[in-house]
Image (cartoon, rainbow, N blue to C red):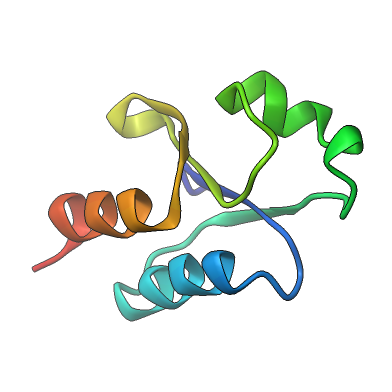
Length: 82
């Protein structure tokens, strides 16, 4: 089972940026689609302290809730890139 989990929203361009990088790096991950309404994103809030997506969890590398697509892409490249 993958240690990567991505909290995302359907149609979100920032989320798509992260999923594209995950696919480029051929990484397995578990996707969690969140509700459109920020007020209903309690799980994301508990994990990352905010309601925006995407949010990445990588337990193997001690990441418990990384927000911001650019930061996530950079982390993925540095951690899993060639």
